[in-house]
Image (tube, rainbow, N blue to C red; front, side):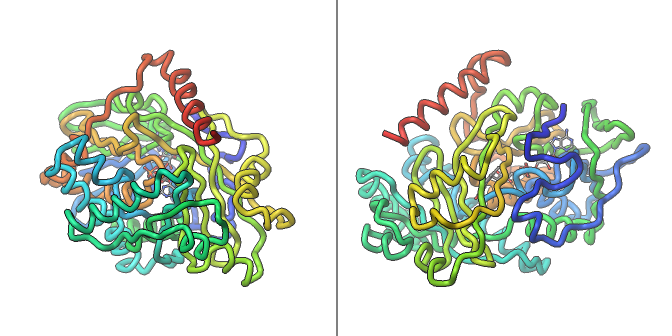
Length: 433
Ligand SMILES: Cc1cc2nc3c(=O)[nH]c(=O)nc-3n(C[C@H](O)[C@H](O)[C@H](O)COP(=O)(O)OP(=O)(O)OC[C@H]3O[C@@H](n4cnc5c(N)ncnc54)[C@H](O)[C@@H]3O)c2cc1C
């Protein structure tokens, strides 16, 4: 099954701002013939790359396969916002899972961003890492909840890495008065995601990981040793990790029943004059709003506004991404009406019903990690690390994630899509009213 959309090119990165500004690597070969390894990882995004590095550092032999190129999927195309949480606030997690489980998830959230920073530092990855994410409230009744969230973290977690920002403060920070309040995630960060992915790939190769590109896995043969097949080769491994996220298709049906693909889009303006760039984002933090279909933006290193938002479902992309995403950008920043849009692109990510990640033991020696919604920069990086621990026989932290309940999307294979689309359109409509 191929997932090439209007903005994709087979075996090449999409024409994004990121691909235009990253030091692309020479291609890795395609898998040919038969190989063996301790671990075979399918998918070379943040999940697979992080898992590969962490497994190799434990002395395991690793084969990493990607259907396209390293970082070709969502990892090389996203908003670059690296959060420090599980995408859900602690009050909600406590209600859903109990206080102990929620606390372990809180600690893993902090570890996810720490792992990103650690990998960047240890492997000297030049990916323009900058601190801070501002989470802005688009409705007045969100203000009290944001204040309570920060208080809750202070009081019950002794954590002061999130601070409350009032309406005037938000206006000063992001040059618009349409938002009511915000939380500043000081541990959160933003980065150039394709540079990060390519840096991880270089680090993985240097650690001894055998990487193969343009090697789509077509079949998994389960057993005490698992045999993975591609068009021209195979890998027999003791352990397999599926790290395909939104691009998994039908490769493993138990995963695809719980993890659905959706598409999201980003535009990049021309470089902005310094004073305009500072007016839009005073402190160079990343920004994301509280809408169901989130608007998110940040400045690139060369002072373009990278603005993301809007979604589509299935593998059908918007025909004119630049105009499609320019609309919500101008609703926030009308002062950009004469600014040129230089790039527009999209990518596919995966969501679960709970919007929390989906970690799964498909078989005793086959793991799957995916479903991070818009939180995969940090959480996918963490997922790879936790999968490597589980493969090495220490599954406790993997299980903390795997025991988050994630039920299948309703409707069975035929009706799953229409049900998802109807649900998403309904919530998207609520954003507008
Ligand atoms: C437009 C956009 C904006 C986003 N913004 C943010 C953001 O700001 N912050 C954030 O935290 N998250 C964001 N996300 C989500 C984030 O990018 C993902 O959650 C994360 O990159 C997932 O990483 P991954 O490695 O699991 O999957 P991917 O990076 O999608 O990698 C999966 C890989 O698997 C390969 N693959 C699939 N099937 C096969 C097969 N059968 N055989 C071999 N290889 C296969 C694919 O080719 C692909 O390279 C965004 C996503 C998009 C699309």
